[in-house]
Image (cartoon, rainbow, N blue to C red; front, top):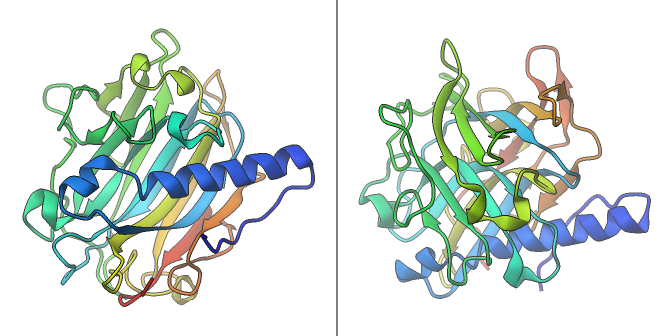
Length: 293
Protein backbone atom coordinates (compact mmCIF):
# COMPACT_ATOMS: atom_id res chain seq x y z
CA UNK A 1 0.00 0.00 0.00
CA UNK A 2 1.35 3.38 -0.94
CA UNK A 3 2.39 5.59 1.92
CA UNK A 4 1.22 9.01 0.87
CA UNK A 5 1.15 12.57 2.11
CA UNK A 6 -1.70 14.67 0.75
CA UNK A 7 -3.25 17.93 1.83
CA UNK A 8 -6.97 17.20 2.20
CA UNK A 9 -9.50 19.91 1.36
CA UNK A 10 -12.24 21.11 3.70
CA UNK A 11 -15.13 19.39 1.97
CA UNK A 12 -15.88 15.75 1.24
CA UNK A 13 -15.98 16.58 -2.46
CA UNK A 14 -12.49 18.06 -2.34
CA UNK A 15 -11.30 15.07 -0.32
CA UNK A 16 -12.60 12.71 -2.99
CA UNK A 17 -10.85 14.67 -5.73
CA UNK A 18 -7.58 14.72 -3.81
CA UNK A 19 -7.58 10.97 -3.27
CA UNK A 20 -8.68 10.25 -6.84
CA UNK A 21 -6.04 12.56 -8.26
CA UNK A 22 -3.29 10.98 -6.19
CA UNK A 23 -4.33 7.44 -7.12
CA UNK A 24 -4.62 8.28 -10.82
CA UNK A 25 -1.24 9.92 -11.17
CA UNK A 26 0.55 7.45 -8.89
CA UNK A 27 -0.83 4.43 -10.72
CA UNK A 28 -0.01 5.90 -14.11
CA UNK A 29 3.65 6.08 -13.10
CA UNK A 30 3.83 2.32 -12.55
CA UNK A 31 1.56 1.05 -15.33
CA UNK A 32 3.19 2.44 -18.48
CA UNK A 33 3.29 -0.50 -20.90
CA UNK A 34 6.36 0.75 -22.76
CA UNK A 35 8.27 0.71 -19.48
CA UNK A 36 7.67 -3.01 -19.17
CA UNK A 37 8.82 -3.38 -22.76
CA UNK A 38 12.26 -2.31 -21.56
CA UNK A 39 12.39 -5.25 -19.18
CA UNK A 40 11.05 -3.65 -15.99
CA UNK A 41 8.11 -5.86 -15.15
CA UNK A 42 8.37 -4.96 -11.46
CA UNK A 43 8.78 -1.21 -11.13
CA UNK A 44 8.58 1.40 -8.40
CA UNK A 45 7.01 4.63 -9.61
CA UNK A 46 7.54 7.64 -7.38
CA UNK A 47 6.37 11.25 -7.71
CA UNK A 48 6.97 14.51 -5.86
CA UNK A 49 5.13 17.69 -6.80
CA UNK A 50 1.86 19.60 -6.64
CA UNK A 51 -1.50 19.20 -8.36
CA UNK A 52 -4.63 21.22 -9.13
CA UNK A 53 -7.82 19.14 -8.74
CA UNK A 54 -10.14 21.53 -10.59
CA UNK A 55 -10.90 22.05 -14.25
CA UNK A 56 -8.45 24.06 -16.33
CA UNK A 57 -8.03 24.93 -20.00
CA UNK A 58 -4.29 25.60 -20.01
CA UNK A 59 -1.14 25.54 -17.90
CA UNK A 60 2.36 26.96 -18.25
CA UNK A 61 5.44 26.25 -16.15
CA UNK A 62 9.20 26.83 -16.06
CA UNK A 63 11.06 23.55 -15.45
CA UNK A 64 14.66 23.38 -14.25
CA UNK A 65 16.84 21.06 -16.36
CA UNK A 66 18.95 18.52 -14.44
CA UNK A 67 20.86 15.47 -15.68
CA UNK A 68 21.27 12.17 -13.83
CA UNK A 69 24.69 10.69 -14.47
CA UNK A 70 25.33 7.09 -13.48
CA UNK A 71 21.67 6.14 -13.67
CA UNK A 72 21.05 2.45 -14.33
CA UNK A 73 20.08 1.53 -17.88
CA UNK A 74 16.46 0.67 -17.10
CA UNK A 75 15.81 3.46 -14.58
CA UNK A 76 14.05 6.72 -15.34
CA UNK A 77 14.07 10.16 -13.75
CA UNK A 78 12.49 13.40 -14.91
CA UNK A 79 10.05 16.27 -14.47
CA UNK A 80 6.80 16.99 -16.30
CA UNK A 81 3.47 18.74 -16.44
CA UNK A 82 0.46 16.45 -16.77
CA UNK A 83 -3.26 16.75 -17.32
CA UNK A 84 -5.83 14.05 -16.71
CA UNK A 85 -9.30 13.07 -15.61
CA UNK A 86 -10.43 12.31 -12.07
CA UNK A 87 -11.65 8.73 -11.94
CA UNK A 88 -11.19 6.10 -9.25
CA UNK A 89 -11.66 3.51 -12.00
CA UNK A 90 -8.01 3.58 -12.99
CA UNK A 91 -8.63 1.58 -16.18
CA UNK A 92 -10.27 4.65 -17.73
CA UNK A 93 -7.61 7.16 -16.72
CA UNK A 94 -6.85 9.62 -19.56
CA UNK A 95 -3.66 11.65 -19.36
CA UNK A 96 -1.35 13.79 -21.49
CA UNK A 97 2.15 14.53 -20.26
CA UNK A 98 5.09 16.63 -21.48
CA UNK A 99 8.46 17.22 -19.87
CA UNK A 100 12.07 16.14 -19.66
CA UNK A 101 13.64 12.87 -18.55
CA UNK A 102 16.65 10.57 -18.46
CA UNK A 103 15.84 7.05 -19.70
CA UNK A 104 18.92 5.21 -21.03
CA UNK A 105 16.89 2.17 -22.15
CA UNK A 106 14.96 4.35 -24.60
CA UNK A 107 17.79 6.53 -25.95
CA UNK A 108 20.91 4.42 -25.33
CA UNK A 109 22.51 7.30 -23.42
CA UNK A 110 22.24 9.18 -20.12
CA UNK A 111 21.27 12.45 -21.77
CA UNK A 112 18.33 14.62 -20.75
CA UNK A 113 15.55 14.45 -23.35
CA UNK A 114 12.30 16.26 -24.06
CA UNK A 115 9.43 13.75 -24.03
CA UNK A 116 5.68 13.42 -24.37
CA UNK A 117 3.30 10.57 -23.66
CA UNK A 118 -0.42 9.93 -23.44
CA UNK A 119 -3.02 7.25 -22.76
CA UNK A 120 -6.78 6.84 -22.54
CA UNK A 121 -6.80 3.61 -20.51
CA UNK A 122 -3.97 3.99 -17.98
CA UNK A 123 -1.48 2.50 -20.46
CA UNK A 124 -3.26 -0.85 -20.64
CA UNK A 125 -3.51 -0.87 -24.44
CA UNK A 126 -2.95 2.72 -25.60
CA UNK A 127 -0.19 5.26 -25.34
CA UNK A 128 3.57 5.44 -25.70
CA UNK A 129 6.60 7.66 -25.38
CA UNK A 130 7.24 10.36 -27.96
CA UNK A 131 6.39 9.31 -31.52
CA UNK A 132 6.62 5.54 -30.95
CA UNK A 133 2.91 5.23 -31.80
CA UNK A 134 0.40 7.41 -33.67
CA UNK A 135 -0.90 10.27 -31.55
CA UNK A 136 1.03 13.48 -31.00
CA UNK A 137 1.47 15.50 -34.20
CA UNK A 138 4.60 17.73 -34.36
CA UNK A 139 4.98 20.46 -37.00
CA UNK A 140 7.91 20.68 -39.37
CA UNK A 141 10.84 22.57 -37.84
CA UNK A 142 9.59 22.53 -34.23
CA UNK A 143 11.87 24.11 -31.60
CA UNK A 144 11.69 20.86 -29.62
CA UNK A 145 10.86 17.42 -31.01
CA UNK A 146 9.82 14.54 -28.73
CA UNK A 147 12.92 12.52 -27.93
CA UNK A 148 15.31 15.41 -28.64
CA UNK A 149 18.29 15.77 -26.29
CA UNK A 150 18.42 18.94 -24.20
CA UNK A 151 21.81 20.32 -23.16
CA UNK A 152 23.55 21.57 -21.17
CA UNK A 153 21.84 20.76 -17.87
CA UNK A 154 22.03 22.83 -14.70
CA UNK A 155 25.11 22.44 -12.50
CA UNK A 156 24.94 22.35 -8.71
CA UNK A 157 25.34 25.81 -7.13
CA UNK A 158 26.42 27.28 -10.48
CA UNK A 159 24.44 27.29 -13.73
CA UNK A 160 20.63 27.38 -13.74
CA UNK A 161 19.20 25.91 -16.96
CA UNK A 162 15.49 25.75 -17.69
CA UNK A 163 12.82 25.44 -20.37
CA UNK A 164 9.27 26.80 -20.13
CA UNK A 165 6.46 24.80 -21.73
CA UNK A 166 2.69 25.19 -21.86
CA UNK A 167 -0.27 23.03 -22.75
CA UNK A 168 -3.49 24.65 -24.02
CA UNK A 169 -6.84 23.66 -25.44
CA UNK A 170 -7.43 25.01 -28.93
CA UNK A 171 -10.84 26.78 -28.72
CA UNK A 172 -11.62 25.90 -32.33
CA UNK A 173 -10.61 22.24 -32.53
CA UNK A 174 -10.55 21.31 -28.81
CA UNK A 175 -7.20 19.61 -29.42
CA UNK A 176 -4.50 20.01 -26.78
CA UNK A 177 -1.62 22.09 -28.18
CA UNK A 178 1.92 22.25 -26.80
CA UNK A 179 4.24 25.29 -26.84
CA UNK A 180 7.74 26.23 -25.78
CA UNK A 181 7.62 29.63 -24.07
CA UNK A 182 11.18 30.60 -23.08
CA UNK A 183 12.25 31.81 -26.55
CA UNK A 184 11.66 35.28 -28.08
CA UNK A 185 8.08 34.29 -28.83
CA UNK A 186 5.96 31.18 -28.12
CA UNK A 187 6.98 28.29 -30.36
CA UNK A 188 4.38 25.70 -31.39
CA UNK A 189 5.62 22.15 -30.71
CA UNK A 190 2.61 20.15 -31.89
CA UNK A 191 -0.83 18.95 -30.88
CA UNK A 192 -2.65 16.00 -29.34
CA UNK A 193 -5.84 15.35 -31.36
CA UNK A 194 -8.90 15.48 -29.11
CA UNK A 195 -9.86 11.90 -30.00
CA UNK A 196 -6.77 10.53 -28.23
CA UNK A 197 -8.11 11.19 -24.74
CA UNK A 198 -11.89 11.66 -24.81
CA UNK A 199 -12.23 12.22 -21.05
CA UNK A 200 -10.09 15.37 -21.26
CA UNK A 201 -11.68 16.62 -24.48
CA UNK A 202 -11.31 20.41 -24.41
CA UNK A 203 -10.81 20.67 -20.65
CA UNK A 204 -8.62 19.04 -18.00
CA UNK A 205 -10.29 18.04 -14.71
CA UNK A 206 -6.86 17.93 -13.08
CA UNK A 207 -3.35 19.29 -13.66
CA UNK A 208 -0.08 18.25 -12.00
CA UNK A 209 3.55 19.40 -11.99
CA UNK A 210 5.80 16.64 -10.69
CA UNK A 211 9.28 15.24 -10.50
CA UNK A 212 9.37 11.46 -10.88
CA UNK A 213 11.56 8.35 -10.86
CA UNK A 214 11.05 4.70 -11.81
CA UNK A 215 13.28 1.81 -10.82
CA UNK A 216 13.21 -1.93 -10.18
CA UNK A 217 12.01 -3.35 -6.88
CA UNK A 218 15.36 -4.97 -6.19
CA UNK A 219 17.56 -1.92 -6.81
CA UNK A 220 18.18 1.48 -5.27
CA UNK A 221 16.34 4.38 -6.84
CA UNK A 222 18.01 7.03 -9.02
CA UNK A 223 18.35 10.69 -8.11
CA UNK A 224 15.26 12.84 -8.58
CA UNK A 225 15.83 16.38 -9.82
CA UNK A 226 19.28 17.62 -8.83
CA UNK A 227 19.78 14.71 -6.43
CA UNK A 228 19.39 17.10 -3.47
CA UNK A 229 16.48 17.74 -1.16
CA UNK A 230 14.27 20.81 -1.72
CA UNK A 231 15.39 22.60 1.44
CA UNK A 232 18.74 23.33 -0.23
CA UNK A 233 16.87 25.80 -2.43
CA UNK A 234 18.13 28.11 -5.15
CA UNK A 235 20.68 26.69 -7.65
CA UNK A 236 20.91 23.50 -5.61
CA UNK A 237 17.48 21.87 -5.74
CA UNK A 238 15.34 21.21 -8.82
CA UNK A 239 12.24 23.37 -9.28
CA UNK A 240 9.02 24.25 -11.05
CA UNK A 241 8.56 28.03 -11.28
CA UNK A 242 6.07 30.57 -12.65
CA UNK A 243 3.20 28.08 -12.46
CA UNK A 244 0.22 29.50 -14.33
CA UNK A 245 -3.30 28.37 -15.16
CA UNK A 246 -5.67 29.78 -17.80
CA UNK A 247 -9.43 29.90 -18.11
CA UNK A 248 -11.58 29.30 -21.19
CA UNK A 249 -10.94 32.86 -22.44
CA UNK A 250 -7.15 32.51 -22.06
CA UNK A 251 -7.11 34.77 -19.00
CA UNK A 252 -4.27 33.84 -16.67
CA UNK A 253 -4.91 33.18 -13.00
CA UNK A 254 -2.65 32.09 -10.19
CA UNK A 255 -3.20 28.60 -8.82
CA UNK A 256 -4.94 28.16 -5.47
CA UNK A 257 -6.23 25.09 -3.69
CA UNK A 258 -3.28 22.98 -4.88
CA UNK A 259 -2.54 19.61 -3.27
CA UNK A 260 0.80 18.07 -2.44
CA UNK A 261 1.58 14.83 -4.34
CA UNK A 262 4.34 12.71 -2.82
CA UNK A 263 4.23 8.96 -2.31
CA UNK A 264 7.68 8.24 -0.85
CA UNK A 265 8.57 11.23 1.38
CA UNK A 266 11.33 9.32 3.16
CA UNK A 267 13.29 9.28 -0.13
CA UNK A 268 12.02 12.12 -2.32
CA UNK A 269 10.56 15.37 -1.03
CA UNK A 270 8.69 18.43 -2.21
CA UNK A 271 8.73 21.87 -0.61
CA UNK A 272 5.73 23.96 0.31
CA UNK A 273 4.26 25.98 -2.52
CA UNK A 274 5.87 29.41 -2.42
CA UNK A 275 5.29 32.78 -4.08
CA UNK A 276 8.30 34.83 -5.20
CA UNK A 277 8.39 38.25 -6.84
CA UNK A 278 10.28 37.04 -9.92
CA UNK A 279 9.40 33.34 -9.96
CA UNK A 280 5.69 33.51 -9.11
CA UNK A 281 4.14 30.35 -7.70
CA UNK A 282 6.93 27.79 -7.40
CA UNK A 283 8.31 24.84 -5.45
CA UNK A 284 11.47 22.79 -5.09
CA UNK A 285 11.60 18.98 -5.14
CA UNK A 286 13.99 16.03 -5.32
CA UNK A 287 16.17 13.56 -3.48
CA UNK A 288 19.38 11.54 -3.74
CA UNK A 289 20.10 8.08 -5.13
CA UNK A 290 19.68 4.90 -3.14
CA UNK A 291 15.97 4.82 -2.24
CA UNK A 292 14.96 1.21 -1.49
CA UNK A 293 11.46 -0.19 -1.85
